[in-house]
Image (cartoon, rainbow, N blue to C red; front, side):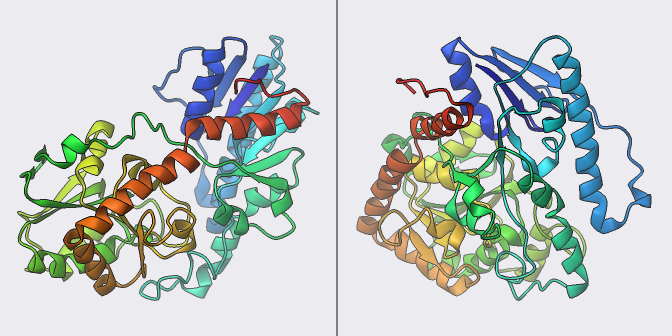
Length: 412
């Protein structure tokens, strides 16, 4: 078959599926994206470039949509050039959020399309309004609603949609959900595997110097910000550090902002350190920034308690990887996390905005080796059952087979 993938950041969440297709050596795979240095053997990468866009004349609430329309035009133009060389895909697969798929039906009318629907924005009931510490000014509600412009256009396109979790599908209007398939995202269970030897050893990473006898609390996010509960973690740490002198904390993430509003000044890390001045021991709380992937896995494998907090929003890859590695995870009791963690079976759930409850959960887990072992085993068992790449790819191929009218291969 001929596959056309479209996503501004190649290879994005399609890495494992694309590798699988290329390994079969019987498909032609083209990937359309913005320029980057990534390459995969067997993939023909087609780059489009956004023109310079003077957004100052565009209404602020419409700027995301304006960029999406420019992406749609640039991606379609690039594909149109490929079409003149005779390439016509059997299926188009891509992410609706960036707008690149909006004009594909004009280039390849009648070609089945499978588009990723990531999140439908609301002014209440999901992420907005979840945290009373950071209320959104109602004057910003139009901007939130405007973020769904591409979502709504995409729902009017032919083809099917997909999303990785039931929670994400539930954010979409009821009338839209039947068009959206759930295809759980998988984890490389071999790469993300437990290592009992690492759990019993010391560890050196950045400023962290951990002995074999010390306990390690870990936290991972792309950026250290309230959407991922960073402020709650920081407020929980003084009680943990005071109660146990053998605890070290490793915090992975940068000082940028991926989701939500920036702090009034500086970074959220600086804000929280200023708030907790004197209560956070810099010799025991280590801000490691963004670390190489292997370092990320080493930290998870050594972790005695891994904290994963989030607003009701899209789940991070780090949660899936922590479960696969067999971490004892303490997660926020939001719908995002509840879909992955059953309290007491493969992790613990704690009120997502309560630092006292979080510190109590961390200390309880560090004290109770039996429950820690139960959670670690349950986390790995859950990953093997629900997060395998084989299952992820098989689900994709089943949907592709239905859309194209071709049977999925027996060895999928």
